[in-house]
Image (tube, rainbow, N blue to C red):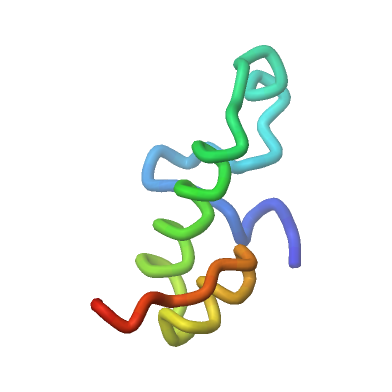
Length: 60
């Protein structure tokens, strides 16, 4: 895996140096990761949730 694997629509990557100047929250990072998995990969929802150490709810 490389920085290019995290490239967004604007050509920015997760590893941009400018991002280090921004504050981030754990929730924001987890949310962004979850969105990336859903939009850019073919992994099942359960795999993405397990990666985040979430237990998928049976109500969804």
